[in-house]
Amino acid sequence: MSTEMHPTRWGDPARASALPQTARDLVALVFPVADRMVADDAAVSLPPSVLTAEMLAELASVVGPDHVLTDERSRRLRAGGKSTPDLLRARSGDVSQPPGAVVRPQSHDEVQAVLEIASSHRVAVVPFGGGTSVVGGLAVRHEGYAGGISLDLGRMTRLLAVDPVSMTATLEPGLRGPDAEALLAEHGLTLGHYPQSFEYATVGGFAATRSSGQSSAGYGRFDAMVTGLVVATPAGPVELGRAPASAAGPDLRQLFLGSEGAFGVITAVTVRVRPAPETGVYEGWRWATFDAGADAMRRLAQAQLLPTVLRLSDESETALNLADPDAIGGGVAGESGEAGESGGGSLMVVGFEGTVESVATRRAAVTAVLADLGGEPVGEEPGRRWLAGRFDAPYLRDSLLDVGVLVETIETAAYWSGLRRTYDAVSAALLEALDGPALVLCHVSHVYETGASLYFTVAAADGPDPLGTWADARSAALDAIVDSGATITHHHGVGADHLPWLEDEVGAVGVEVLRAVKAALDPQGVLNPGVLIA
Image 1: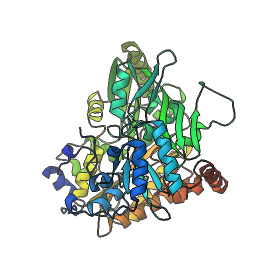
Image 2: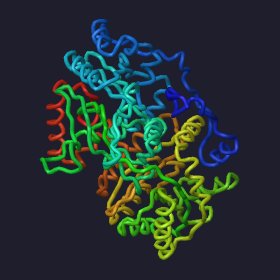
Image 3: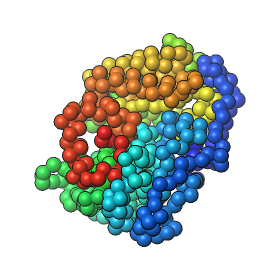
Image 4: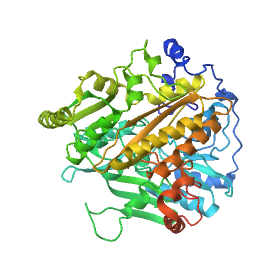
């Protein structure tokens, strides 16, 4: 797998592929299909860097001249994230906010020195891990600054320490998901954090965005795994987390978890780890309705009987996931937003990992609850299919963009008592804003005793202004989320895209608290301008 993602697509360039003709024909039943042109990589011209030679030399004195990159390809690959708007701009040749240089430190001390240099010259710094942000978190904003750099943490990839007695490990921030798991596996351990971006996202990014993985039911959210942090800030280094629990004032780790590079650069993360599982079993259950399946999830969570993986597709997503290729068109929504059903109901995927004995025991207990609540077991094949394709959705998104279908996601979380209200409000807002043939799918994949996430996938014709189309739909969805009392983001983060709605969630005083923290840690405001803090 390539270590660099495609400049105008998600993931490994070798996996970029056209939509198969059968699928293309089915998509054409609902959406107008036409090949979209993508700007030739070689023909795209970037704005020149405004960083001075003296500034570049000062940075090179810290990280070495080979690790201050100013070539166009390096700058272009770090000019944004991988949201659909990011890709639409890149595909059109719009790379208007690239860094003036890519700086690649190898240690905490080098990161600290780079931040001090940038702060003294008022140069914007955007931390870069795997480049997987989908909320506008990686654009380098130059306005009011003497230039901007991408601080690429890709050389900081060590497993610094393992404590097998306390079951913790300390990792550097540039480690990608697969590499972190491989290093821990040498010690018989696992982190168990598998977001859809797993193949490219990094440990530092997991922490900075409060990431949540597909196995969160069993292993927990990433922020719940973190026991300690080392952070470089323009004001100086910060080291937090000296005990498993503390009453020494507010937990300052929470200032940096979810801070998206706006308060500091995370240079080491200590996490709780688990023994690597001996075995895993993944299976499917069918529910008569999405509501019935969601209620079963609630019962499991509140009985503290969660499996390792627990996810539930609504009726529309189930229809598309389960239909055979010749019938999938029946599951695509028309203007009304209604979808056909293949087999009907909602599909739940349930996974168990651990020792052979623990898997058998937990599976038996969960099975008894689900069967008593009216669930229908449908065997292990749905679980195996989900496991095999768990990281593939972004590749399909790109293939659909190629033929003029706009595909994007938005996610939230709500208390159980308000989950259906939020689901209905967001679905209706998206369909109304898109105003034409559209498909809105949803699933639940993160559950708690008190509530759950909702993850919406949206498809519509791209039209003459796809960026405007999605901006309007996203705004309508976020308004509906706020009005229904849910959170503006469960695990993607705030970035720049969700920032206008942050005050609705945390209040005016909360925003002022964040600004005060920013002023204390980053007095010149050089860290990721325009993200998290207006």
